[in-house]
Length: 183
Length: 166
Image (cartoon, rainbow over all chains, first blue to last red; front, side):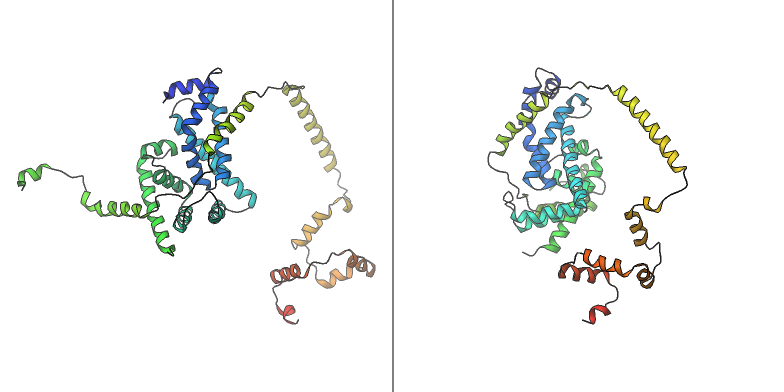
């Protein structure tokens, strides 16, 4: 695995940027994909957002000052792109972002790229009842398996705040599932 | 069996036992949740993604800069002069107090009436229409389909009596 400083330097260099960009895509495409997918739920939208994310990264790498880790910066761009996408769709349809997510969840049952069962759909509905940031915390900690320290850098929130937010999220989701489980 | 002295050497964090149950239940709740999201990707998606991104990347890097015909400075001077001219003529326009009712757009009049800024009852309105105008109106009106008309009436009418008469 290439050293991060070397990678950043190569990305900013005219001669090496193409090769460096390829390495970047190789290292991060799956992690960023799944991160975005948990926010927007369907594959096609995720694909669009992921590509836009990498293009944005490529176009703005010269502005990256190295105050945070590269992956932190990339995750932030990916998160912002995904949330902007949802906000845009909500505005176009004149509904709330929660309603956009509800529509996306309703579509999961007929989505060929969803192999979950009813409990996983209920889980998504439960996650959707949480405030936006708490949804991110939950998804990234529970499914993404980030440490609180990593999350703290990405979401610019204290570790204590994140722990509290996560535990509240788990409790709310569990209560929701218990009260909505039909199986 | 450990002696009392040996047990006393060990310490636990403050409030450990008080908070133990709460932490345990948090962990248990987490264990009960589904482990997977159920999401999957098309086959070879990540392989093809590299090709797609490479294409986008070469588009972005081969984009040539186009030199503007008119420089930004010249354009901004011209825009400022145009803005001043428009402002000047609009002041001249508004200083003329005489307005013709024909200048007021029909949509503005409609909005004024719809927002109940004019309190006209049906008899006053009827008085304003001549028979000729009324006859011409009926031929212009596009009739709504019955189901749309029914929906409109159900949503718009507060008094249900007219509907009950039929």
